[in-house]
Length: 320
Ligand code: A3D
Image 1 (spheres, rainbow, N blue to C red):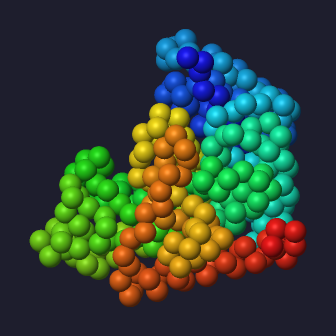
Image 2 (image 1 turned 90 degrees about the vertical axis):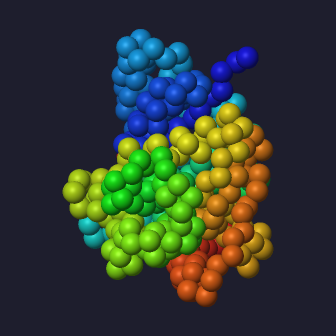
Image 3 (image 1 turned 45 degrees about the vertical axis):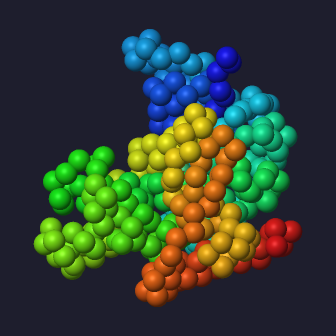
């Protein structure tokens, strides 16, 4: 059977890490694309030279031509510019929206059957725009954020409880940003909900709230430490988990920015919710019960996403 093909649009910090992880996991052949000539070629060659040491077989190519992504099974998009000093959120939105237009056209032309994972920020708006620009079915275009946000939550909880990260599951809903909704009721240690662990005396409610807040601020914590750039190892690992679930038809239940068509009372927007990812893409959107407080947090998060989408439609009225 021929190997799968994975196209990575954007060969920056996350793009390079994605290529390495996809190689190590032998997910398929890899094409790294970037507009900066030399960078994708250089990173691809460097990773290819690691293959004999690590013992993986994959063709890894760097390119600045969309034609090279032809027939890709998975496309992961990190292309864009980061926010620079003096740049407003709307300035960034306008620039990255143009990038999504180019990327969407490239995917539509050369990889219309791919499963597309968007990582470019502001995530919930960019994935929405990318789906529109590419014209691919909404079930084949998702945003990566929830896997990362819940991985951070899981890590912090595992450290707190001194248990394996493997035995901690976590649930984060909503948009990617300060308004994300980590759900303690649906997050567990070996199946025991965090709310029960509070009752069992494992953790004080106030301490749990601190961990929830640290999760919300997880991206900023890394930016403050790195000073230039943002997180890339965990974001790349998270997108690879989504790609693997699709390519190997694992049907994992993962929180992703998915297109809602009435679920949670929302139509035509991308919001972070639990989904099943299998060979057909997003095979199911899981609608969980939210209590009053959770619903209020979720609505606030959705309002933030709505604000971003409105800003996009002002810049590009054709998207409305
Ligand atoms: P960076 O290292 O700057 O890589 C971005 C790459 O995109 C650069 O190599 C650029 O040359 C390239 N690029 C710019 N314009 C285009 C274009 N038109 N076509 C193709 N390539 C282009 O950034 P990064 O890898 O650290 O982050 C990439 C994106 O992910 C950013 O938007 C981040 O904000 C975002 N991000 C999202 C999360 C989420 O959880 C959603 C987490 C971390 C980073």
